[in-house]
Amino acid sequence: MKVLLFNGSPHKHGCTYTALAQVAGELEKAGIETQILQIGSGVFRGCTACYGCRKLGRCAFGEEDGLNEILAQCREADGFVFGSPVYYASANGTLISFMDRLFCAGSQALAHKPAAAIASARRAGTSATLDEIQKYFTINQMPVVSSTYWNMVHGGNGLAEEAAQDLEGMQTMRNLGKNMAWLLQCIAAGKAAGITPPEPDRGARTNFIR
Image (tube, rainbow, N blue to C red; front, side, top):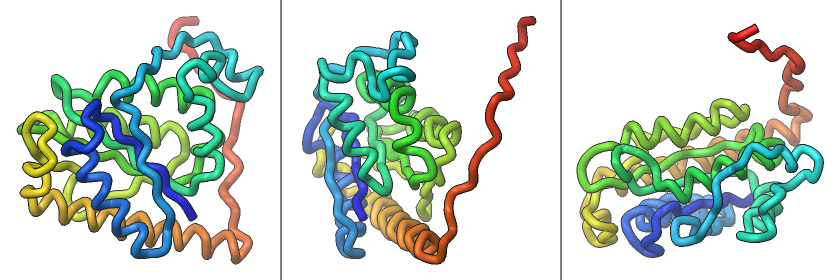
């Protein structure tokens, strides 16, 4: 099994990375492979709603910035963690542009796979950021992994050493990793017993202006 962790911070080894690394450590203890992908320092254009992905099976612009390569990795992965710093009580714009396109082009590669959101802030805005990221999961049939507190850490200006001093935050990240490992193991056991994801109803789309 493998979990991909996405670092939405432009600081490659800052607070968000420190939180993700705690989660990854617990997953690896459980025998689950992990990889942290650096997203926040990249350049990902926003989704243009061209829906070229519906015909191509990949993002029409994904060869330009590596998104399609990441999408291919998502098809092989079993779970995901998306981490972001808080900017004006919101997630990093680069991460959101990335997620817009990833979920539009690769919804089937992500569906029914567990996912978690992590937010890092100096002080406030974490719960709003978590809510923003988790909406991607809940529209795409993905189990949302929780912890013993909301998945947040605190540290100023991307300072990893400050995040590491947030003892409850680090504890929350470790427990998140344990919970994700447990859920992945449960899903694997279910598959071995012949239990498959449900087939959703399709076709009904209601517009509010007729």
